[in-house]
Structures are given as structure tokens and as C-alpha cells.
Length: 61
Image (tube, rainbow, N blue to C red; front, side):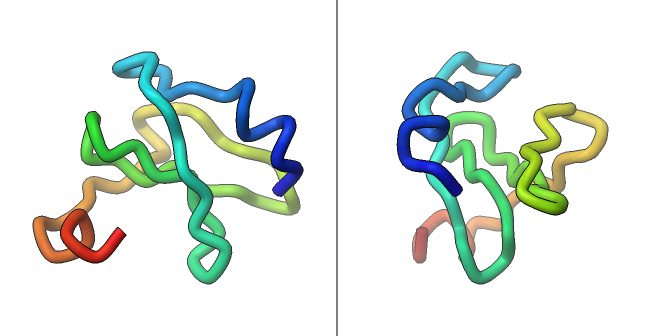
């Protein structure tokens, strides 16, 4: 994920910052408790495509 692109992207639900999880290929929104997939290098910033983060995942990220 291009760091400059990551600086521009925000969570569509909260407008908060996103962090990139390289291992899972996801953009993480801690404030929305959502993980947005990145497919073929393209962030899919749709709430219906995101998965909800568990409490354990939020603690480790």
C-alpha cells in the first residue's frame, strides 16, 4: 500500500484514519471497528464489504 495513498484515505463511516494490515490485506478503522479489504492493491471502502473487528483484534492492532 502506497503510504501517500494511505494518508489520503479515511474511513467512510467515521471519516477517521485507517491503518494498513499487510498480513491480512485490510485497512483498519479502529473508530468504526471495521476492516476494509484490499483486493489486487485496490482498497474496497464499502461498509457492506467490511468485516467487524473483534475486541481481541482491536487490542492487538
